[in-house]
Length: 240
Image (cartoon, rainbow, N blue to C red):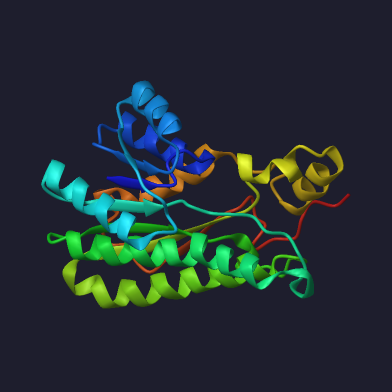
């Protein structure tokens, strides 16, 4: 199994979950020190690669196949948070958002389907903001909406090869990239109230869903977008 964005909250939790299940896991990320710490903790194999560089993603997949003989599953849990209204979003900010969220998914999917000769599973990450109109989420909603479209089309294209493509769509998850929200008591309270289950997510919440999609036992599931979001994408929030 290969996990991109392996040092983030959801990514590192996914690596740990997979290792507890006995899977060989390649952890891909930009920060060598963090990857090595994860490797020491649970035995993952670290590979340094920049998710904004398609050639490096391709190389990470090829190195995985060279070392272990095959690739059965891959997850792209790279993401970013840009909360700005559209008219204040600079072109370069939008481009970066697309590169981190859409292009990284495209590059990993492209490399993975080439490597999965005997079938496999690819999981991409979206956001509940795609299906819920949230203020100031235009850039990330556009990027992740495109990820969902990419996944659904790829699921149809590669189904004859027994390659499954699915998506997890989290709500707000406690992570380094969301620290500006979770570190502010008023912002956290407002965000929590938007989630019907009354709490924000943790990396383990997302990891459980990712691992379910990667599990060969669930080989009859493809082309799905699963909201792992405390109800944010489908239910009204808790009353104040």
